[in-house]
Length: 220
Image (tube, rainbow, N blue to C red):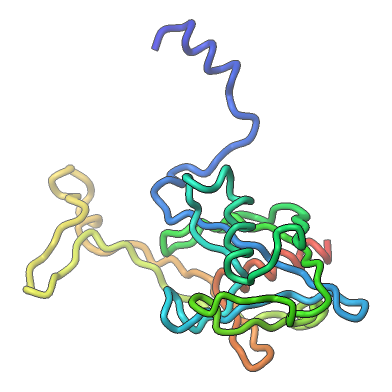
């Protein structure tokens, strides 16, 4: 690259950093919805239909970023919420972004906080193909109850054994001349998993992290 081209790039350098390698992940967006109820705010949750990905789990509305439909992740969160909950977009006010989550399972989640302008959940016309049911929980419950904390161990495997008993090498450390330790599984990173037990359900994983993000910002 010649100097004039590089000088032009320097002048247009992004003001904010992005996420390195984001295009390699499953990119999604969700909307953490608040509903005013009797002078309090409730989080609105949905239980996913058993027939879809991660069926039976509790989550906020949201889904995969679609570059053919969405100009940005905020549009993804709104589009998916409208489709899943059967609510008019005019009934949703987006307050602002929450912290982006980068999951060890290969997913990024750009999240937003929003307020739902309806009188009750009965006004929603949920998409039964994706949503089994919806329910709400007071935000104050999460302010007053810390989540349970568990951990899982994450290890990098440079190879695996397929069903035929053959070793499939994914990362040829030996051929690359790297230290011998990288020819075997390495690392043993402990990843935190937060769990809330409420309303007869278990709320965990990314959804629990988003709840903690909101509560942390409220308390701060």
